[in-house]
Amino acid sequence: MLAYGASADQVDEIARMRKSTTLEALLRFCQAVETLYTRDYLRRPTPKDLQRLLQKAEARGFPGMIGSIDCLHWQWKNCPTAWQGDYGNRKGQKSIILEAVAGFDTWVWHAFFGVAGSQNDLNVLGQSPVFNDVLRGKGPNITYQVNNTVYQTGYYLADGIYPRWTTFVKSIPNPRSQKQKLFATYQEGYKKDVERCFGILQARWLIIRDAAHAAKMSTTMTTTRTRVCEDTRRDQWTRIRKKPKLHQTHMVKPWI
Image (cartoon, rainbow, N blue to C red; front, side, top):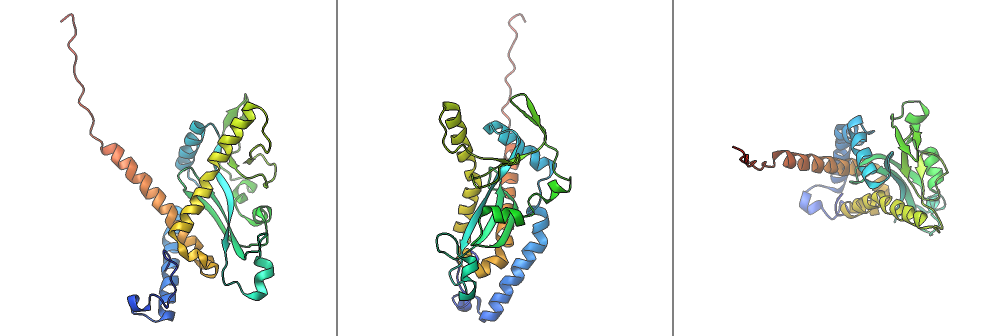
C-alpha cells in the first residue's frame, strides 16, 4: 500500500484481511517505524555528519553549506469540499506542503509536513522548527572563510522566495558578468539535491497521491528514505575498507 498506493480493498485478497484490519495494521506499522527509527535517522546532524556535509560542500565550492531547503506540494486528490479553500494552491490544485532539508546524497535531516497548500514557502518557514536550535543558542558551531571574511553560521541553498538572511544563499536572478553566471549555475545545480530527494519520494511511495494518508505516514516515508541513505553510505564505506591492498614491490637499490 505504501509503495504502490493501493487501497485496502485492492489488497484484501492478498493479505486475507478486512479493510479495517488492513488499515489498522498499516497505521501500526508506521507508528512502529516512527517509534524505533525516527530518533536515530530523522535527526539533527551530529558533529560527524556535519563534518561530512561540510567537506563535500567545500569540495563543491560552497564552504559552510549544510544542505538545500525547499517545499513540495503533495496533491490531495479527494480533498473535502469544505477544506478546498484552505488547501488550494496557486495552480488550482488541492495540496499539503512538505518542507525538507536534504544533503548531497538526498539524506533528509529535517521534514515539516502538514501546512495547507494555499500558503507559500515563507508562511511554511514561519511555522517550521528548522531554526529553533539557532534561536535557542544551540546551533552547530561552523566556521569558514570566504573572501577573507570569517563566518560562524552555516547556510542553506534556497529559492528566491526565501528572505535575505545570512542562513540562505540564493541564486542571482539576472546574472550579467561571467562570475555571476558561473555562481548562478552552480547554486541552481546544487540546490536540486532536495528536488531530487522529492522526486525519489514520489517515485518510491505512490501513496502520497492520497494526501489524507500521506499526512499520517510522511514521517515513516522520510525516515525510511534516510535510513536507506545511511545504510548505503555504510555499505560503501565497508567495501572500501575491505578492498584488498596491492602488494608493494620492493625495488632494489642500484648501489647494492
